[in-house]
Length: 60
Image 1 (cartoon, rainbow, N blue to C red):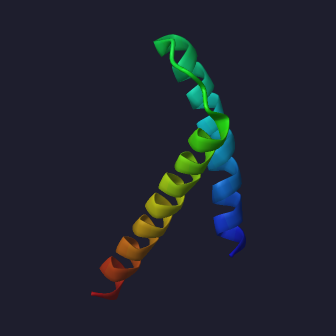
Image 2: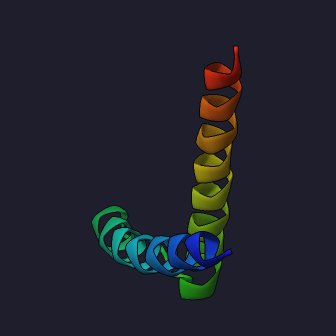
């Protein structure tokens, strides 16, 4: 459980930084909450997916 909280926290922070830089470079509107939520969801799905794949690989 604590692992997911850390992933959400850092993904939100990194998503905000990347979103601000990308928004400035592409001259687009910057929506902080939306970018942070999407980054956190993508990070959670990726981390849990990698974890599940590596567990199923080591069982065989």
